[in-house]
Image (cartoon, rainbow, N blue to C red; front, side, top):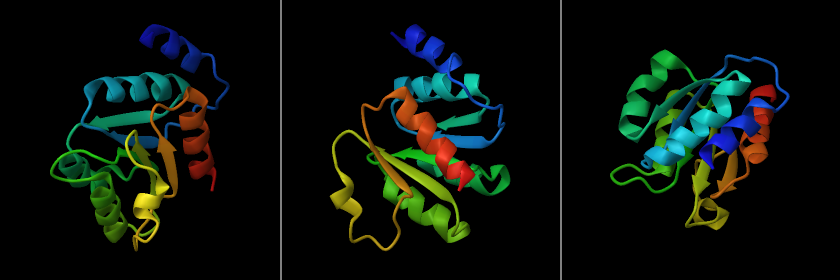
Amino acid sequence: MLISLVKAGKNMNSSKTKAVVFVVDDEPMLLELAEAILKPIGYNVRTFRDPELALKEFPAARPEVIVTDYAMGRMSGMDLIRECRRLNPKQKMVLLSGSVDEQVFADAPVKPDRFMSKPYQIHELTDCIRTLIAA
């Protein structure tokens, strides 16, 4: 299945952007999937199982977009969003979750730019990132 998803990602029309995209998730298979989708269409993908490591690399790498899971142990995706926005208020952020919906952060002072439910379709992820980079 992963092979067919990679092939589908390679066949998508896209310019070679080389934009840096961080993908943060504590599940290795989901990191591999996101990388398999995004790298063939030209993104410079950096994957992290630990959100604290992503936060440490954030200032030097200056990613265009950060895609993060919601539930990840010691540091949640919302914690990562808050910390990244503290360092760069304009940082573009996508929050993923298979267990919660947008109501979880409806009253939060800092919100992601986009929310996506897992599982997501390939075009949902690529369209979301493309739209955020173009904005």
